Image (cartoon, rainbow, N blue to C red):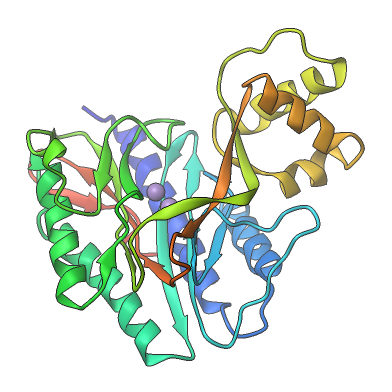
Length: 306
Ligand code: MN
Ligand code: MN
């Protein structure tokens, strides 16, 4: 059972996430800088009294997920694009996770975006207590295929717990037989995130990573510099994902990349490589966070504002 205080924090994280998502989407236009949009979105979350649950993801066209501007790296929105803005807020560790796709410059890309949005709506209609994970994936796959696209099979939704974005169960975007007997009971927080593509429907790791998180394993035998950085990371971000550019802003550039590399070798940090559609085709995504209760389901990220 959730206390009133927990419920209030969950709903607040959802509303702030939704507001950040809408702000990000409103700023997408050809030539816009991902860095400027992500910083505005993250600053809004902080201004509302929350923390980003993870760096603002701003993934364009065949980049399906996990792009955020790096220390030196930035991108600009092309004339023809599907732009995924994926954001979330943390209120005392209670999280939201939500995404929108903005399609510009092409009716076909608009249709692709609609397929992911309609798939999320189809899933939302069956998100009641004890829903089968298999049925969620089936609703998503059926909707996307009926519009002539493919779901991305190796990207999934996920259950959420306090300070934990991926709390154990994955929610596939297709009718995955291995999830047939798995149900989501009352009290479950879960992010559902259909990804659709004109391509193969698989993502592969790209060469770069700009997002990291602490694994929670205390590393041994670190250099003094890496140990200091590790303490800073755990204190500021706990085990939630963070961006290299955040570290640079707060820690400085000196020795940063070397210390991060050492922490990855010591398995103190995970890295999240940019995920790219295997055939180089555009990808669309929509996402909401759901709180499943005994007698109703709340979409915490449905609406922005009070
Ligand atoms: Mn997300
Ligand atoms: Mn998610």
